[in-house]
Image 1 (cartoon, rainbow, N blue to C red):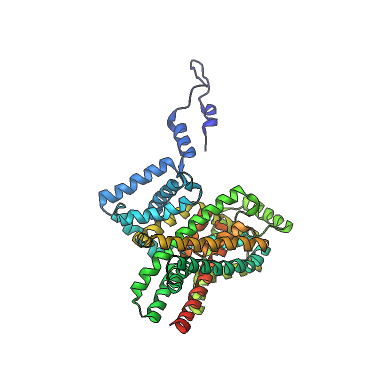
Image 2 (cartoon, helix red, strand yellow):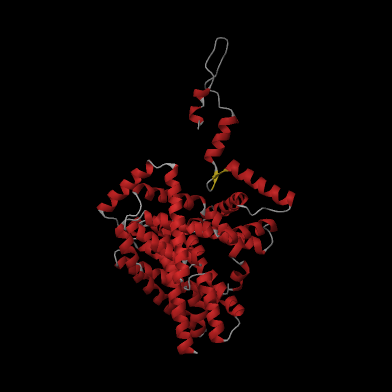
Length: 462
């Protein structure tokens, strides 16, 4: 594409009888238009495209009275609102550098829905699109596979083995601190643990809050709806606290670079550096078919996880994660396809994250539940629990020779809202490469916490 620097070259050559001023300022069309498109963006969207997209959405909504939920329209809609909310968060003073973009992209849409500001056709179309397509799983599988395929074998093996130690230590300390703070505030240890601390570390909504509510209904004789109403707001607030902690850790990483691997858990060896250089060279020669191979690889591995879920009951993202690790360890794909997976990862990270968070905020983030749980007592217990969990992960991982900030980000994900929480926390921390470890922390860690706690509740405490 021709830019402004070449504008003079495109001026017509001097002809007999013609006078050309080569120093004159280029006209707005097309050079000024191109400059506006290249230099000004909202997220990844050029400003002119962004304005046109907003006009198209409003025209569709207010002229026809409805908005189709088909993928073409939703790409424009989620892209427009997602990057708009993210841009608002980025431009906030102070907190803009501490994860506010991910918070705004998730919770502003939720509030707009609750207060009736977002037009109903947009809400209905976005909710239908999100729930019918399960777009979040496509996002997560491309992020996980791209992250794993870009890891060296040493990080892959040692990282998965070592990360369990700070995870377990963080959970133990977080539970003790949370119960202790609740006791000091006048809450019973039983109430604090089962209705405040445990929901934070339960692994989100689908894998955490709902199983907990079913268990409480069966064991404590509560109505499941009442139990879910008490647990769900705490999950939301715990996830919000995790996002803020992730943003703060990202800021600390910029201030103290020696404490972070910027998405890596372990310092690389010389052999790892050579391998990374080789993959980078391969990536530079990649064509479109290689990118397509990376997408297909991620989709096939997710199908493996789906089949595994039907056979073993293991969540599909976790089964896919294990399958991807196996493929990587046995060198099941070529370096060229590995580079394709990495480009797929980069595409989804930069271009799909904020639209996904907008859809999550509209479809499955109930603003009223967050407001209900926003009491001083709950807030103090939740913040103390999450902060102690993250702080413990930081110091324990440092003792184990890991990058403490990156390991602490994984600890943040232990308080997240499942897959959606992992996306928001890692976005705030700017370390989406850690998604495989985040899934382990959220899904496996949450499942263990829920199962063991309900077992203890049913057999020893009731």
